[in-house]
Amino acid sequence: MKINNNNISGINPYQRNLDKVVKPENTVQKKDKIEISSAAKEMQTNSIVQARQEKVEALKKQVENGTYKIDPQAVANSIVDFYKKQ
Image 1 (cartoon, helix red, strand yellow):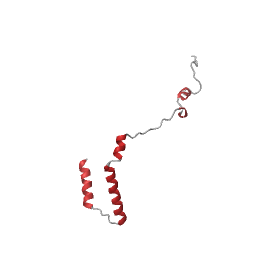
Image 2: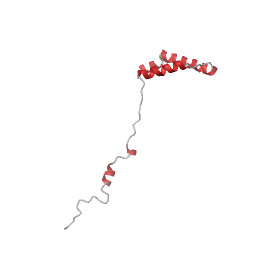
Image 3: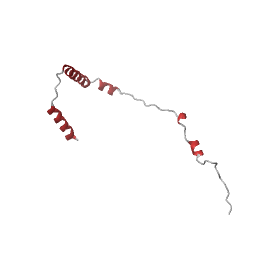
Image 4: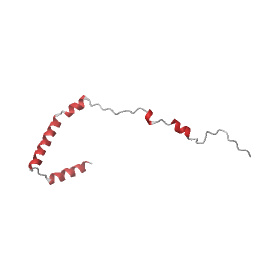
């Protein structure tokens, strides 16, 4: 019986596949881009945002003065309502 070494691709046959892999430094990195539409910008300046800001400022003053009181019954009801919706 005779064994011939035909079609030998070298010591490491996987080297050809490694050469085909694209190297990360050769690829161009794409950057994400965000654009805010004019409608979204309008929503940001909406009266709802202003009202919320006023409410936050009022709460900050109450906390600083020590007059902020938490209603435990209202908190409990809010939690129950939240889970009933789901």
